[in-house]
Image (cartoon, rainbow, N blue to C red):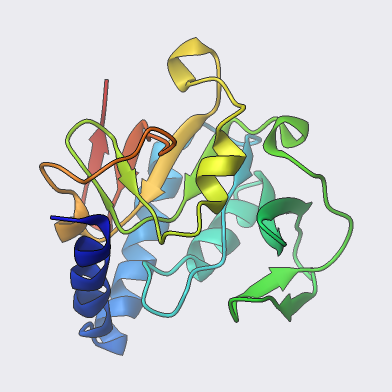
Length: 190
């Protein structure tokens, strides 16, 4: 199956979810992630989810409450910039309609020095290959960082259970992940 066809299938499945299911999944996801992360204070990047993605609002609140140092992305042209957040951070709608943090940003993840990168996606396969939304933002952001096995940050994709697949189509520039966390399970690779 092509990337475009798989993306279309998964997006249709996501749109079919009810609001109550999305809310339940967001709470379960926050609990699963906080149980999996190292003890605070860890430096963690996260993101504000699209309406059909596994919700991250409860997760971001839980990370801050646990004492983690949390950074969120802001889109700047073809790249992501990273903003440290705290309770009371102000947000503005970005180019994709997602609320993005306002304030001083750094240009790349190497400057953030994250311990854990929580990233969105549409699917991950049995080898840890990640299928993103198609914009390449995270592939570009992660490219200069070493893999976790080489001392880099732990890369964690947040998905729904049925989005952990046997195989996803990949290109050479696609990033891999070390862990997938869904509302109901944790899958580790390598």
